[in-house]
Length: 454
Image 1 (cartoon, rainbow, N blue to C red):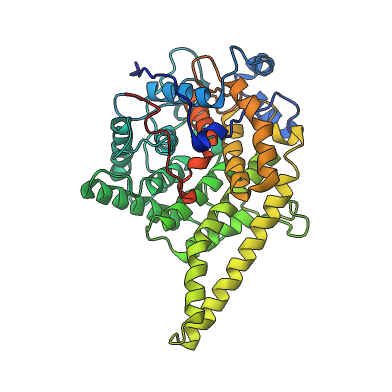
Image 2 (image 1 turned 180 degrees about the vertical axis):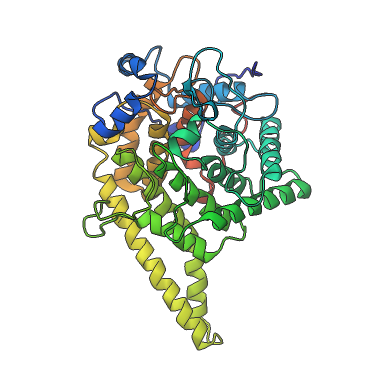
Protein backbone atom coordinates (compact mmCIF):
# COMPACT_ATOMS: atom_id res chain seq x y z
CA UNK A 1 0.00 0.00 0.00
CA UNK A 2 1.37 3.37 -0.97
CA UNK A 3 1.76 5.69 1.98
CA UNK A 4 1.45 9.43 2.17
CA UNK A 5 4.64 11.22 3.05
CA UNK A 6 5.24 14.59 4.62
CA UNK A 7 8.16 16.97 4.28
CA UNK A 8 9.54 18.55 7.42
CA UNK A 9 12.08 21.27 8.09
CA UNK A 10 14.93 20.55 10.48
CA UNK A 11 14.36 21.75 13.99
CA UNK A 12 15.74 25.10 14.93
CA UNK A 13 17.63 24.91 18.21
CA UNK A 14 15.14 23.95 20.89
CA UNK A 15 15.07 25.42 24.33
CA UNK A 16 14.34 23.83 27.66
CA UNK A 17 14.19 20.12 28.22
CA UNK A 18 14.49 19.11 24.55
CA UNK A 19 18.16 20.06 24.46
CA UNK A 20 18.69 17.53 27.20
CA UNK A 21 16.50 14.79 25.73
CA UNK A 22 17.38 11.25 26.45
CA UNK A 23 18.47 9.48 23.29
CA UNK A 24 18.64 5.75 23.40
CA UNK A 25 19.80 2.91 21.18
CA UNK A 26 19.91 -0.81 21.48
CA UNK A 27 23.30 -2.30 22.23
CA UNK A 28 25.31 -4.37 19.80
CA UNK A 29 24.99 -8.09 20.45
CA UNK A 30 26.84 -8.98 23.62
CA UNK A 31 24.87 -11.96 24.85
CA UNK A 32 21.52 -13.68 24.76
CA UNK A 33 19.52 -16.38 26.43
CA UNK A 34 20.22 -19.77 24.80
CA UNK A 35 16.58 -20.76 25.24
CA UNK A 36 15.17 -17.65 23.62
CA UNK A 37 17.75 -17.66 20.87
CA UNK A 38 16.99 -21.27 20.00
CA UNK A 39 13.29 -20.49 19.77
CA UNK A 40 13.90 -17.65 17.34
CA UNK A 41 16.38 -19.70 15.32
CA UNK A 42 13.65 -22.26 14.58
CA UNK A 43 11.89 -19.73 12.36
CA UNK A 44 12.28 -19.66 8.58
CA UNK A 45 14.25 -16.46 9.04
CA UNK A 46 17.03 -18.13 11.00
CA UNK A 47 19.50 -18.12 8.14
CA UNK A 48 19.31 -14.33 8.04
CA UNK A 49 19.88 -13.61 11.71
CA UNK A 50 23.65 -13.89 11.77
CA UNK A 51 23.98 -11.32 9.00
CA UNK A 52 21.52 -9.00 10.71
CA UNK A 53 23.41 -9.29 13.99
CA UNK A 54 26.60 -8.37 12.22
CA UNK A 55 25.00 -5.40 10.46
CA UNK A 56 23.77 -4.04 13.79
CA UNK A 57 27.30 -3.58 15.12
CA UNK A 58 28.29 -0.53 13.09
CA UNK A 59 25.57 2.05 12.43
CA UNK A 60 25.52 3.44 8.91
CA UNK A 61 25.38 7.13 8.07
CA UNK A 62 26.13 10.16 10.23
CA UNK A 63 25.24 10.15 13.90
CA UNK A 64 22.53 12.74 14.46
CA UNK A 65 22.03 14.98 17.45
CA UNK A 66 19.08 14.04 19.68
CA UNK A 67 17.10 16.96 18.26
CA UNK A 68 17.66 15.97 14.63
CA UNK A 69 17.10 12.29 15.42
CA UNK A 70 13.72 13.24 16.82
CA UNK A 71 12.75 15.29 13.76
CA UNK A 72 13.81 12.61 11.30
CA UNK A 73 12.07 9.92 13.31
CA UNK A 74 8.79 11.85 13.44
CA UNK A 75 9.06 12.57 9.74
CA UNK A 76 9.50 8.88 9.00
CA UNK A 77 6.61 7.84 11.22
CA UNK A 78 4.20 10.38 9.74
CA UNK A 79 5.15 9.20 6.28
CA UNK A 80 4.06 5.67 7.15
CA UNK A 81 0.46 6.54 8.04
CA UNK A 82 -1.99 4.86 5.68
CA UNK A 83 -4.95 6.64 4.06
CA UNK A 84 -7.31 4.85 6.48
CA UNK A 85 -5.61 6.65 9.37
CA UNK A 86 -3.76 3.61 10.69
CA UNK A 87 -0.22 2.33 10.66
CA UNK A 88 0.95 -1.13 9.66
CA UNK A 89 4.11 -2.91 10.72
CA UNK A 90 6.35 -0.99 8.38
CA UNK A 91 7.69 -4.13 6.74
CA UNK A 92 8.92 -7.50 7.90
CA UNK A 93 7.34 -10.93 8.19
CA UNK A 94 3.80 -11.87 9.12
CA UNK A 95 2.50 -15.09 10.64
CA UNK A 96 -0.02 -17.08 8.63
CA UNK A 97 -1.54 -19.28 11.31
CA UNK A 98 -4.86 -19.58 9.48
CA UNK A 99 -3.25 -21.60 6.68
CA UNK A 100 -0.56 -23.17 8.85
CA UNK A 101 2.24 -21.60 6.85
CA UNK A 102 4.24 -20.08 9.69
CA UNK A 103 6.09 -16.94 8.75
CA UNK A 104 5.36 -15.27 5.43
CA UNK A 105 8.17 -13.09 4.13
CA UNK A 106 9.28 -11.18 1.06
CA UNK A 107 8.63 -7.94 -0.74
CA UNK A 108 4.99 -8.77 -1.44
CA UNK A 109 3.91 -9.39 2.16
CA UNK A 110 0.77 -7.38 2.87
CA UNK A 111 1.16 -4.61 5.42
CA UNK A 112 -2.34 -3.42 6.31
CA UNK A 113 -3.03 -1.08 9.18
CA UNK A 114 -3.40 -2.69 12.60
CA UNK A 115 -4.47 -1.39 15.98
CA UNK A 116 -1.25 -2.09 17.86
CA UNK A 117 1.03 -0.13 15.57
CA UNK A 118 -1.56 2.62 15.20
CA UNK A 119 -1.93 3.07 18.96
CA UNK A 120 1.78 3.28 19.71
CA UNK A 121 2.24 5.70 16.78
CA UNK A 122 -0.59 7.91 18.00
CA UNK A 123 0.82 8.02 21.53
CA UNK A 124 4.11 9.13 19.97
CA UNK A 125 2.34 12.01 18.20
CA UNK A 126 0.61 12.97 21.46
CA UNK A 127 3.92 13.10 23.31
CA UNK A 128 5.31 15.29 20.52
CA UNK A 129 2.46 17.77 20.96
CA UNK A 130 0.14 16.66 18.16
CA UNK A 131 -3.38 15.64 19.23
CA UNK A 132 -6.74 15.65 17.43
CA UNK A 133 -7.28 19.10 18.94
CA UNK A 134 -3.85 20.77 18.72
CA UNK A 135 -0.56 20.74 16.89
CA UNK A 136 0.54 20.92 13.30
CA UNK A 137 -0.27 17.24 12.82
CA UNK A 138 -3.72 17.27 14.42
CA UNK A 139 -5.30 15.97 11.20
CA UNK A 140 -3.04 12.90 11.29
CA UNK A 141 -3.84 12.37 14.98
CA UNK A 142 -7.58 12.75 14.30
CA UNK A 143 -7.46 10.12 11.54
CA UNK A 144 -5.63 7.74 13.86
CA UNK A 145 -8.20 8.34 16.61
CA UNK A 146 -11.05 7.61 14.19
CA UNK A 147 -9.32 4.40 13.02
CA UNK A 148 -8.97 3.20 16.62
CA UNK A 149 -12.56 4.00 17.56
CA UNK A 150 -13.93 2.35 14.41
CA UNK A 151 -12.29 -0.92 15.45
CA UNK A 152 -13.38 -0.74 19.08
CA UNK A 153 -16.96 0.09 18.15
CA UNK A 154 -17.17 -2.86 15.74
CA UNK A 155 -15.68 -5.28 18.25
CA UNK A 156 -17.88 -7.72 20.15
CA UNK A 157 -18.51 -7.20 23.85
CA UNK A 158 -17.49 -10.63 25.08
CA UNK A 159 -14.00 -11.46 23.82
CA UNK A 160 -10.76 -9.73 24.76
CA UNK A 161 -10.06 -8.84 21.13
CA UNK A 162 -10.76 -5.36 19.77
CA UNK A 163 -9.73 -6.10 16.20
CA UNK A 164 -10.23 -8.73 13.52
CA UNK A 165 -6.66 -8.34 12.25
CA UNK A 166 -4.59 -11.39 13.18
CA UNK A 167 -1.05 -12.73 12.92
CA UNK A 168 0.83 -9.45 13.34
CA UNK A 169 4.33 -9.43 14.74
CA UNK A 170 3.09 -7.77 17.92
CA UNK A 171 0.45 -10.45 18.52
CA UNK A 172 2.76 -13.37 17.80
CA UNK A 173 5.70 -12.05 19.78
CA UNK A 174 4.32 -10.15 22.77
CA UNK A 175 0.76 -11.38 23.19
CA UNK A 176 -2.49 -12.21 21.45
CA UNK A 177 -4.28 -9.29 23.13
CA UNK A 178 -1.55 -6.68 22.83
CA UNK A 179 -3.80 -4.55 20.57
CA UNK A 180 -6.41 -4.34 23.34
CA UNK A 181 -3.90 -3.18 25.94
CA UNK A 182 -2.28 -0.67 23.58
CA UNK A 183 -5.75 0.67 22.71
CA UNK A 184 -6.53 1.20 26.39
CA UNK A 185 -3.26 3.09 26.82
CA UNK A 186 -3.80 5.31 23.77
CA UNK A 187 -7.42 6.16 24.62
CA UNK A 188 -6.36 7.04 28.17
CA UNK A 189 -3.68 9.43 26.96
CA UNK A 190 -6.18 11.13 24.65
CA UNK A 191 -8.18 12.42 27.63
CA UNK A 192 -8.35 16.22 27.46
CA UNK A 193 -6.93 16.28 23.94
CA UNK A 194 -10.12 15.99 21.90
CA UNK A 195 -11.45 18.81 19.69
CA UNK A 196 -15.03 18.83 20.98
CA UNK A 197 -17.51 17.21 23.36
CA UNK A 198 -18.72 14.70 20.79
CA UNK A 199 -15.18 13.40 20.18
CA UNK A 200 -14.54 13.25 23.93
CA UNK A 201 -17.74 11.27 24.45
CA UNK A 202 -16.68 8.84 21.73
CA UNK A 203 -13.23 8.46 23.33
CA UNK A 204 -14.71 7.83 26.78
CA UNK A 205 -17.23 5.27 25.49
CA UNK A 206 -14.56 3.34 23.60
CA UNK A 207 -12.26 3.33 26.62
CA UNK A 208 -15.06 2.07 28.87
CA UNK A 209 -15.65 -0.79 26.42
CA UNK A 210 -11.97 -1.70 26.38
CA UNK A 211 -11.73 -1.60 30.19
CA UNK A 212 -14.83 -3.78 30.47
CA UNK A 213 -13.26 -6.36 28.17
CA UNK A 214 -10.01 -6.35 30.13
CA UNK A 215 -11.71 -6.72 33.51
CA UNK A 216 -14.00 -9.48 32.24
CA UNK A 217 -11.03 -11.61 31.16
CA UNK A 218 -8.60 -10.78 33.97
CA UNK A 219 -7.80 -13.78 36.14
CA UNK A 220 -7.39 -13.64 39.91
CA UNK A 221 -3.61 -13.35 39.61
CA UNK A 222 -3.90 -10.50 37.08
CA UNK A 223 -2.95 -12.54 34.02
CA UNK A 224 -5.08 -13.28 30.94
CA UNK A 225 -5.84 -16.72 29.59
CA UNK A 226 -4.52 -17.39 26.08
CA UNK A 227 -2.49 -14.18 25.97
CA UNK A 228 0.23 -16.21 24.33
CA UNK A 229 3.40 -14.87 22.78
CA UNK A 230 7.15 -15.33 22.65
CA UNK A 231 7.57 -12.63 25.32
CA UNK A 232 3.99 -12.06 26.48
CA UNK A 233 5.23 -10.52 29.73
CA UNK A 234 5.66 -7.33 27.71
CA UNK A 235 1.96 -7.13 26.88
CA UNK A 236 1.20 -7.85 30.54
CA UNK A 237 3.13 -4.65 31.28
CA UNK A 238 1.05 -2.83 28.69
CA UNK A 239 -2.09 -4.08 30.44
CA UNK A 240 -0.84 -2.20 33.52
CA UNK A 241 -0.50 0.94 31.42
CA UNK A 242 -4.03 0.47 30.08
CA UNK A 243 -5.76 -0.14 33.42
CA UNK A 244 -3.87 2.43 35.46
CA UNK A 245 -3.94 5.03 32.70
CA UNK A 246 -7.68 4.51 32.29
CA UNK A 247 -8.25 4.89 36.03
CA UNK A 248 -6.27 8.13 36.14
CA UNK A 249 -8.18 9.47 33.14
CA UNK A 250 -11.51 9.00 34.91
CA UNK A 251 -12.69 5.71 33.40
CA UNK A 252 -14.50 3.23 35.61
CA UNK A 253 -11.76 0.82 36.66
CA UNK A 254 -12.41 -1.28 39.72
CA UNK A 255 -9.98 -1.34 42.64
CA UNK A 256 -10.12 -5.12 42.34
CA UNK A 257 -8.80 -5.02 38.77
CA UNK A 258 -5.91 -2.76 39.80
CA UNK A 259 -5.12 -5.02 42.76
CA UNK A 260 -5.09 -8.12 40.54
CA UNK A 261 -2.81 -6.37 38.07
CA UNK A 262 -0.44 -5.53 40.89
CA UNK A 263 -0.19 -9.23 41.74
CA UNK A 264 1.49 -9.78 38.36
CA UNK A 265 3.72 -6.75 38.79
CA UNK A 266 4.99 -8.07 42.12
CA UNK A 267 5.24 -11.69 40.99
CA UNK A 268 8.72 -12.99 41.70
CA UNK A 269 9.90 -9.83 43.48
CA UNK A 270 12.21 -10.46 46.43
CA UNK A 271 11.97 -7.28 48.51
CA UNK A 272 15.11 -8.02 50.47
CA UNK A 273 17.27 -8.58 47.39
CA UNK A 274 15.50 -6.04 45.20
CA UNK A 275 15.25 -8.47 42.30
CA UNK A 276 12.76 -10.86 40.72
CA UNK A 277 14.43 -14.09 41.79
CA UNK A 278 11.61 -15.21 44.10
CA UNK A 279 9.15 -17.89 42.90
CA UNK A 280 6.82 -16.40 40.31
CA UNK A 281 3.15 -16.93 39.70
CA UNK A 282 2.38 -20.16 37.87
CA UNK A 283 0.40 -18.19 35.29
CA UNK A 284 3.06 -15.57 34.69
CA UNK A 285 3.40 -14.87 30.95
CA UNK A 286 6.50 -15.96 29.05
CA UNK A 287 9.56 -13.73 29.06
CA UNK A 288 11.41 -15.80 26.41
CA UNK A 289 14.13 -16.29 29.02
CA UNK A 290 15.26 -12.67 28.64
CA UNK A 291 15.56 -11.00 32.04
CA UNK A 292 15.30 -7.42 30.87
CA UNK A 293 11.94 -8.03 29.15
CA UNK A 294 10.44 -9.42 32.34
CA UNK A 295 11.92 -6.93 34.75
CA UNK A 296 11.35 -3.84 32.62
CA UNK A 297 7.70 -4.81 32.11
CA UNK A 298 7.15 -5.44 35.81
CA UNK A 299 8.95 -2.28 36.89
CA UNK A 300 6.86 -0.34 34.38
CA UNK A 301 3.71 -1.85 35.89
CA UNK A 302 4.83 -1.03 39.42
CA UNK A 303 5.48 2.57 38.38
CA UNK A 304 2.04 2.82 36.76
CA UNK A 305 0.48 1.58 39.98
CA UNK A 306 2.49 4.10 42.00
CA UNK A 307 1.11 6.94 39.88
CA UNK A 308 -2.43 5.73 40.47
CA UNK A 309 -1.75 5.49 44.20
CA UNK A 310 -1.11 9.21 44.50
CA UNK A 311 -4.82 10.04 44.36
CA UNK A 312 -5.75 7.00 46.44
CA UNK A 313 -3.33 8.03 49.16
CA UNK A 314 -4.65 11.59 49.27
CA UNK A 315 -8.20 10.29 49.51
CA UNK A 316 -7.39 7.90 52.35
CA UNK A 317 -5.46 10.53 54.30
CA UNK A 318 -8.33 12.96 53.94
CA UNK A 319 -10.71 10.39 55.41
CA UNK A 320 -8.42 9.74 58.37
CA UNK A 321 -8.15 13.43 59.23
CA UNK A 322 -11.87 14.07 58.82
CA UNK A 323 -13.46 14.22 62.29
CA UNK A 324 -16.87 13.52 60.74
CA UNK A 325 -15.79 10.29 59.03
CA UNK A 326 -17.33 7.16 60.59
CA UNK A 327 -15.08 4.59 62.24
CA UNK A 328 -15.55 1.92 59.51
CA UNK A 329 -14.49 4.42 56.85
CA UNK A 330 -11.39 5.33 58.83
CA UNK A 331 -10.53 1.67 59.30
CA UNK A 332 -10.87 1.13 55.55
CA UNK A 333 -8.67 4.16 54.87
CA UNK A 334 -6.02 2.81 57.20
CA UNK A 335 -6.03 -0.51 55.37
CA UNK A 336 -5.75 1.37 52.07
CA UNK A 337 -2.71 3.26 53.30
CA UNK A 338 -1.05 0.01 54.35
CA UNK A 339 -1.57 -1.45 50.88
CA UNK A 340 -0.14 1.71 49.32
CA UNK A 341 2.86 1.57 51.67
CA UNK A 342 3.51 -2.03 50.60
CA UNK A 343 3.24 -0.98 46.96
CA UNK A 344 5.78 1.80 47.57
CA UNK A 345 8.23 -0.66 49.08
CA UNK A 346 7.84 -2.91 46.06
CA UNK A 347 8.50 -0.21 43.47
CA UNK A 348 11.45 1.16 45.43
CA UNK A 349 13.01 -2.28 45.80
CA UNK A 350 12.51 -3.15 42.13
CA UNK A 351 13.86 0.20 40.98
CA UNK A 352 16.95 -0.10 43.15
CA UNK A 353 17.60 -3.67 42.05
CA UNK A 354 17.22 -2.99 38.35
CA UNK A 355 19.22 0.25 38.54
CA UNK A 356 22.16 -1.80 39.71
CA UNK A 357 22.00 -3.96 36.59
CA UNK A 358 21.96 -1.20 34.00
CA UNK A 359 25.74 -1.04 33.77
CA UNK A 360 25.85 -4.72 32.81
CA UNK A 361 26.04 -4.70 29.02
CA UNK A 362 24.88 -8.31 28.72
CA UNK A 363 21.78 -7.59 30.77
CA UNK A 364 20.96 -4.47 28.77
CA UNK A 365 21.57 -6.25 25.45
CA UNK A 366 18.49 -8.38 26.02
CA UNK A 367 18.14 -11.00 23.30
CA UNK A 368 21.48 -9.90 21.93
CA UNK A 369 20.53 -7.58 19.09
CA UNK A 370 17.86 -5.07 18.22
CA UNK A 371 14.22 -6.05 18.21
CA UNK A 372 11.00 -4.32 19.05
CA UNK A 373 11.05 -6.14 22.38
CA UNK A 374 14.28 -4.35 23.28
CA UNK A 375 12.91 -0.94 22.24
CA UNK A 376 9.79 -1.47 24.33
CA UNK A 377 11.83 -2.63 27.31
CA UNK A 378 14.07 0.42 27.06
CA UNK A 379 11.05 2.71 26.89
CA UNK A 380 9.77 1.12 30.12
CA UNK A 381 13.15 1.43 31.80
CA UNK A 382 13.65 5.00 30.64
CA UNK A 383 10.28 6.10 32.02
CA UNK A 384 11.07 4.46 35.36
CA UNK A 385 14.61 5.82 35.61
CA UNK A 386 13.46 9.30 34.66
CA UNK A 387 10.85 9.25 37.40
CA UNK A 388 13.45 7.94 39.86
CA UNK A 389 15.73 10.83 38.98
CA UNK A 390 19.10 11.48 40.59
CA UNK A 391 22.45 10.13 39.52
CA UNK A 392 21.06 6.81 38.30
CA UNK A 393 18.91 8.67 35.79
CA UNK A 394 21.78 10.89 34.72
CA UNK A 395 24.04 7.87 34.21
CA UNK A 396 21.36 6.01 32.23
CA UNK A 397 20.78 8.99 29.98
CA UNK A 398 24.49 9.51 29.35
CA UNK A 399 24.96 5.81 28.67
CA UNK A 400 22.15 5.69 26.14
CA UNK A 401 22.40 8.96 24.20
CA UNK A 402 25.30 8.06 21.96
CA UNK A 403 24.03 4.65 20.94
CA UNK A 404 20.44 5.57 20.09
CA UNK A 405 21.41 8.35 17.74
CA UNK A 406 23.97 6.04 16.15
CA UNK A 407 21.45 3.25 15.60
CA UNK A 408 18.95 5.39 13.69
CA UNK A 409 18.71 4.59 10.00
CA UNK A 410 19.37 7.19 7.33
CA UNK A 411 15.64 7.46 6.57
CA UNK A 412 14.86 8.33 10.20
CA UNK A 413 13.56 4.92 11.23
CA UNK A 414 14.77 2.42 13.78
CA UNK A 415 14.68 -1.25 12.77
CA UNK A 416 14.46 -4.56 14.56
CA UNK A 417 16.75 -7.46 13.69
CA UNK A 418 14.88 -10.25 15.42
CA UNK A 419 11.27 -11.03 16.34
CA UNK A 420 9.52 -7.63 16.05
CA UNK A 421 11.28 -6.28 12.99
CA UNK A 422 8.61 -3.84 11.80
CA UNK A 423 10.07 -0.36 11.65
CA UNK A 424 6.94 1.47 12.76
CA UNK A 425 6.83 -0.12 16.21
CA UNK A 426 10.59 0.16 16.66
CA UNK A 427 10.58 3.79 15.56
CA UNK A 428 7.61 4.75 17.72
CA UNK A 429 9.03 3.19 20.88
CA UNK A 430 12.46 4.73 20.22
CA UNK A 431 10.79 8.13 19.83
CA UNK A 432 8.80 7.62 23.02
CA UNK A 433 12.13 7.07 24.75
CA UNK A 434 13.38 10.35 23.32
CA UNK A 435 10.18 12.04 24.46
CA UNK A 436 10.26 10.69 28.00
CA UNK A 437 10.10 14.16 29.53
CA UNK A 438 6.78 14.76 27.80
CA UNK A 439 4.89 12.10 29.77
CA UNK A 440 1.57 13.69 30.82
CA UNK A 441 1.93 12.63 34.46
CA UNK A 442 4.93 14.92 34.77
CA UNK A 443 2.80 17.98 34.10
CA UNK A 444 5.12 19.28 31.40
CA UNK A 445 3.86 21.07 28.29
CA UNK A 446 5.39 19.85 25.05
CA UNK A 447 7.66 22.25 23.19
CA UNK A 448 7.45 20.23 19.98
CA UNK A 449 4.14 21.38 18.53
CA UNK A 450 5.81 23.59 15.94
CA UNK A 451 8.68 21.23 15.22
CA UNK A 452 6.78 19.04 12.75
CA UNK A 453 5.27 21.06 9.93
CA UNK A 454 2.42 19.86 7.71
